[in-house]
Image 1 (cartoon, rainbow, N blue to C red):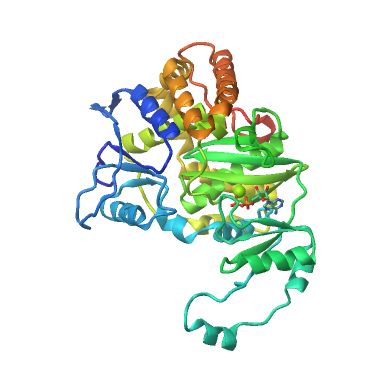
Image 2 (spheres, helix red, strand yellow; image 1 turned 30 degrees about the vertical axis):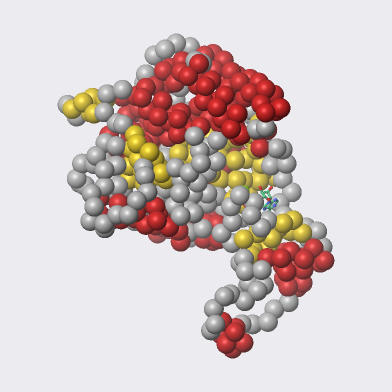
Length: 438
Ligand SMILES: Nc1ncnc2c1ncn2[C@@H]1O[C@H](COP(=O)(O)OP(=O)(O)O)[C@@H](O)[C@H]1O
Ligand SMILES: [Mg+2]
């Protein structure tokens, strides 16, 4: 058993103010916990960036990181903390740094998931290294881009192998578009990917063992991308979308990630599910924001209070054993992976522990979201996000959606003592409902 960690949550933040403020408020609602005969207080602190000796003590027992993807200094501090102090990380840079979108495609293809046909093509422009010209002349195969594109089929998507935030993504209709996009890709390494003609776009946000599958509309402006809809997927597709998100995270040891899936009929095609720094802004999540930040608090508190081991050991073999078992069909494999994912995240113990120690939290969060305290965060966020002439409109928009969440929760909880239990009904695909919590 690892040494007991400090019960401090560190936040490594960028420009965001909305969710950290909500996180701090909701964490404050947790109160002292009675764990193993002791009283445990779990505070949080916004971490600062400064030079560090590799042997300096690390105070936080758990860190929620929003910087490592872009900045090396905090990333390397996180690695030192994990290696030397067993600091629990959401997320660990050890896998996120090396396993990007491309690796996630490969691994989930191996597990039999329905990833659209994807081809990696070499750089358009030579990489900036004096030895490259020689290497390239000697070893690079020449290739026929048009032939590859014909095999993928038009229309297709060209996107960076490690993409995020729609950087460098283009939809290609024909040969001219193909060459234009490839020329423009420059020193970015690109995939060509077959287009999925989808009926629904599902975006699942997973935090530890909690998953919310949401109806996403990428063509809409940011504030309108998530629709509030409960039954936008069939029970089967809904279960599968949840499962993809959980399995990806368990497989790679990710704790806080979003998965984008294109749903055609009942077929679930994952296309983008390696997002080390998923969007949790109140101005995009709105209705789902209170759930997301509560889940972040709940899972962090659970991990610290139960001294959950922090590890970068992956158990890929266990997944591959299922993947390689020819007697199992797709559904049986997905069920097998889902069981491994629930084991990884300790799903059952987690909910039991929350019932025992955090059953007061949903009601307290509901009261707070319904108060001026939350409204102030919303107001400040709208003021810092939108131009003055649009603020009133957006404030009304978000107040309406958050108000709807409050109303729905009041109807659902039916009384202060009941914990809405997102995973409780999740046992078999036939009994799923999707778009509500989880
Ligand atoms: N294979 C595909 N079929 C249909 N649409 C796609 C496909 N791949 C990407 N898209 C569209 O392009 C957008 C950006 O691609 P995505 O892989 O999500 O990149 P990023 O990691 O930059 O978000 C998606 O949200 C979707 O609207
Ligand atoms: Mg995306």
